[in-house]
Image (cartoon, rainbow, N blue to C red; front, top):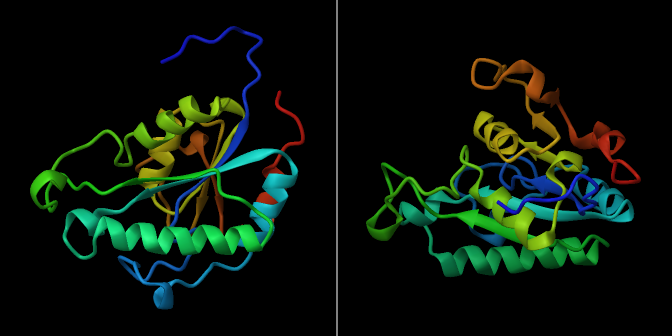
Length: 193
């Protein structure tokens, strides 16, 4: 970690999980024809950019490690997805992904890598690369592991998108539960604290 002074003013980030937050999670989505954007994602992304948030996608992609699709397939879909955001007026800062799985990964992908959520590796990489103030940043995820990773990385606002009760996995005071992206814009702040 980089030791930062008390008056540190880093950038704010909007961390987004992919499957279940950006697109409908049909399970190991890796083809454009199977990629369906979730209602409200572009409105949210535009609002975040307007308030000077860097948008970082943080996604476990164990389908690569399991051999369901290749890293090249993932990059091809990611390039297309980022272009859709750009055309909608919201540039993605960077997409971070973890292709590993500790049990079902094949070959080099079979490991419990620190990038795989619930570990915070992808967040910490983004924080260092973009000079992000984690405490002023927001995460939206649809699994307990997303929230656990955000909390572990020091993300100030962790938002769980879903109906299930994940409180048995995550301390109840570390996240907010929402059922759609419609209300997320109210969490976006104009200025870094």
